[in-house]
Length: 359
Image 1 (spheres, rainbow, N blue to C red):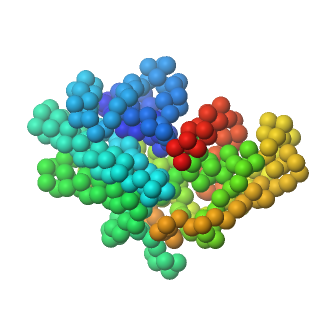
Image 2 (cartoon, rainbow, N blue to C red; image 1 turned 180 degrees about the vertical axis):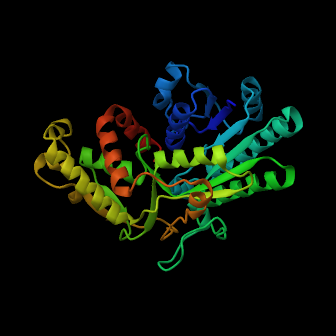
Image 3 (cartoon, one colour; image 1 turned 90 degrees about the vertical axis):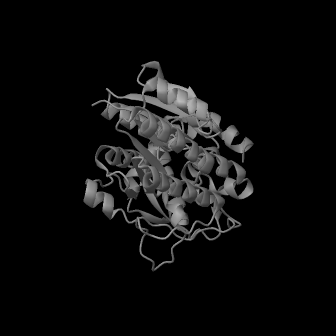
């Protein structure tokens, strides 16, 4: 049976990739994107789907109960996939208020409206899927096992604390009211449509423009990396076969130190320039255009306040219960990411000034 979905934050990085995946895999479903189009949202990323009538776009705030109610009623929504969030740790340190409003108040508003629509109103079969992060679990030491779905929450930044609170709200609405919910906690994503303030697209665009590549501290902080299209497939698998009330960790089985990532990215970019001399003409400020290498741009900067040292996801539950495993290794996913950015300068170039203006 066809579904009717609202995808919140569907104009953001992970949301866009999920929308493209879902409309391709489920062309008969109705899909509405609800996005406030804050600095990291880009409606243009969805333009082909809007033009072809495969999605309906609503610009609006998840904190507005009247708007959410109107959208759910108009489209007879039975599924909410909740990506909308403030998600940049540095921004949460300098300005936490927006994170509390969007991540806590916004999630609660969606839950309350969904409860009224589905449990007090239509009574239709439904699903509320909440997209969260591995950062709610805190930080790992080198010898610690990877995070599982039962790892104790120990958020260390205003961002991760706000996401932890939203996770608890989702669980409470299932336990108290019987709302049919699932939650996924993912590791760091990378891939197409990534706003260029985050590590990998920041490094990519800095290399192409000959700018400094900043590395926090000594670059030893470790993250687990997940190609965004694999993440979209994982969420889709949870919607298709996941058990209501369950939490699923989605990880890429790719632990890398930040400095190792930057150096690998530099090598890949050097290889692209070596194989395509036209890139030096397109990007005359890149170090390769003057005979230097990408790693000449690396600069170590003061560490982030309260910087978590290591994240790692144990994704054995979703593999065991739902048969999901990532398709991409970090090397293959990074190569695809580099090639996408080289082919889509018209997408990311206008975003550089926006990222600088709100930085």
